[in-house]
Length: 184
Picture 1 (cartoon, rainbow, N blue to C red):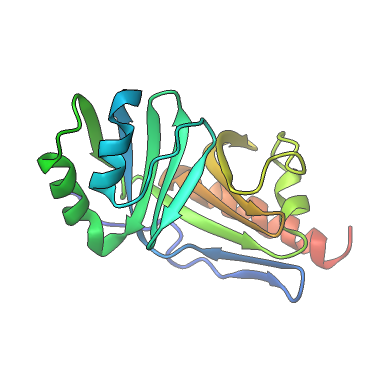
Picture 2 (cartoon, rainbow, N blue to C red; picture 1 turned 180 degrees about the vertical axis):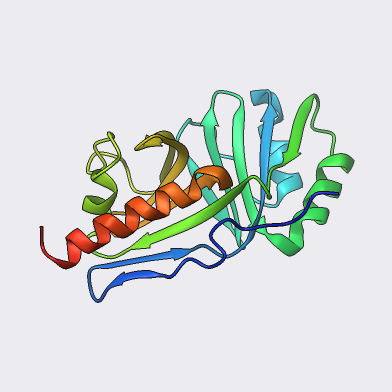
């Protein structure tokens, strides 16, 4: 039996008033979806949110989020209570060959908000976040941890990271948060 766990269940929020807030994102259902481009519309209908066709694209609707992270790969986020409904929708839909895998227990989400969000992430992310378009997502390396980075705006990011790397990433965020607080 798989036990549910959140490796950061006792993590304290990181906050510098008016500049940076780092919090665990609400629990979510997470799916890895692989399918051919021809099935995008049917899969979007089964999910309840259109799937973006372009790599890096993000679409959201009614609490559902779809991110295209490869030529035939999407990460889907939904409220935890919707997991079974989504699985049933895909099972019943005429999508064609596809793979939908529930990876909800593998990852967790971390939300960064505030005017120092971009500079905080830039301390350990090699991407030029200033040139990353708002409303986009990409796989990247955060120090030595692979994660999925979603840029909602220059002051709002979400990181989806494997449970096994979450503690390391949280420690980095706390360290950089202390530097932000000291204006270093």
